[in-house]
Length: 205
Image (cartoon, rainbow, N blue to C red; front, side, top):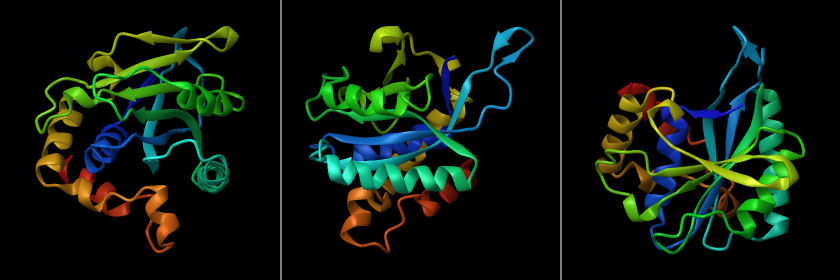
């Protein structure tokens, strides 16, 4: 089943990349637990309702990743969510293919959620206006393969809304207040669920 991105999930991914333009960044996509897998004989898309920004700079620190996954998994269970995917923006512009880190973390998520997807942010197309989707989506297939699919407005719950709100938040420099797990580990008072940005998205909807 393909994933669809909500405005909130898309916005926060791009804000994370915008906050650290010279670093690689990554995070997790969370979806509501699926009640029914098919509707009228068609697969029901997995709606990624939010994302959790993880790290910037060094992405391959296994102990920190384990701590993050444990905490986020607990938070997901409390909110009836499931970790459904992984996103990453690579350090080099124009490099938006999943690397070993992306595939390794996504494979770990796929152990518990078989429809896991990898979303790669294309840094080279990150602008204030973001007139078109700047992500590549790789779906999980058999034999641990990841296959890209065409990204179009159907990959979003509401692309017009996502584009408008992402642009407004980028122009408002909201990325400066985005908290990732690295920031949380520096100061535990930093809330990686980003309630303020969530409120800003809701306010602009």
